[in-house]
Length: 299
Image (cartoon, rainbow, N blue to C red; front, top):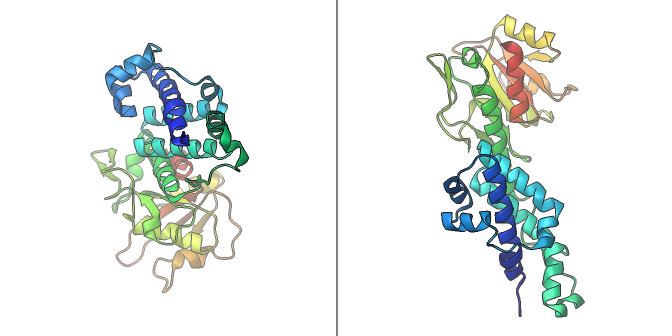
């Protein structure tokens, strides 16, 4: 009796780790860095590097395995992907390969009796919640890297601070929106990010995004920057639709301003201030990197 998990352990994992270790070394990781990233010992990394660990040629030849290795390697190298997301992505591929695919074939070859059965039930959902959570966090990190690498961005941060947010696909409240805890502030001319993206930490920008979604607009991310007439003029000149709303309106002013509008993928809403309310410009779009990239127009 041989379980499919044994195929994963004996065929998939050594091959995947060997390919990923090689990919990371090519990206400049030291042996110690690779060991930390993969959660294995340096001696194990050395064995992978010197070909002392046997790999499964069919797994190694699969294009999907190579694609996963490249994505995970790039994500770990840039910091866009956490070890948790890397694990989730690997688990998703494993479950796909188990379901009437490569690993199922290898399993059946080792257990011919299985050929009479239809295969295995799916254990992991490729569109599952954990994967979506990690993908959104990764997207926010990429957007943050754009902002912090953009010279002059700190000058666009309003007094209340900026935040870059992105929502889960079926977001209904702020707990479904990833953002920067404590917001992004200008500290001596430098945009300072106090922590990693978390869910449920933004009431301000997340609320604007959720209001836009409640109005039926297909947007997933938002960023707030300073308001002045020049900012709006530059955005309009670049082709972005800019819509004003009244922050003192009695009910959901953003939703009221956007309902029944046919809006492009990326657009802008703004308010010119009110009693105790700082004027703010909001850039909304499909994902965090896209809205972050709009900032470059203003600098």
